[in-house]
Length: 211
Image 1: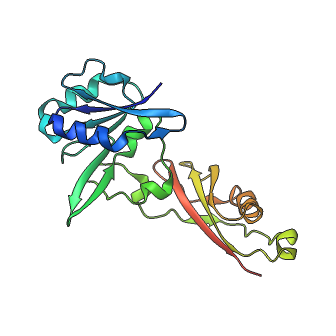
Image 2: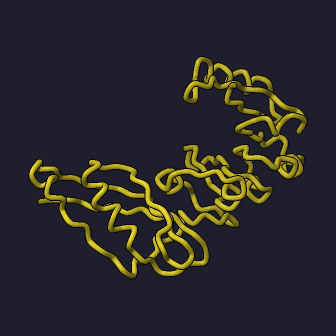
Image 3: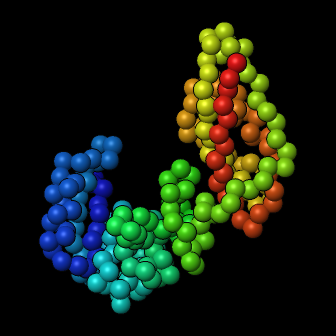
């Protein structure tokens, strides 16, 4: 079964170029395919839908008709307000992106904090990753693992921490670092307590282990 990218509206030349770009590409064991859509019929079958700016008048209605877990990407200033998830923007000659975290959450689509931290802040977009980091009210420092000391292991560990509204750590993922050092940090970060917030947030934790 292919990973299907749908292009809603726009010219055929763009679609053909995109097909050439993904030719032979796979996601895991699944080939990547591209289809051009002029209407919302069968659009829900796509894993990702790219909305061309030329279709801005019908974008909101098209998004409203999609109730699955498709990733919705656009290129129009009003795209996020219309219900989109990721909007591509041209800023000083570079393509950047803005994100509506609420729209992603509704479809249960999750990206790493490292990816989301690169998003530009969008007016009207509720992106907790673009806000200032939450303050840690209760912090436990990790112990340097004795086996790591014997092996002369040094270096930094980076974690992605899901924090609830009450400040309690709900989940921790390792983004980088030696497994022995990462495990030592992970075990204590689970005990940390953050300041309460208006909603859940994902925080980045970096810690350097030096003998």
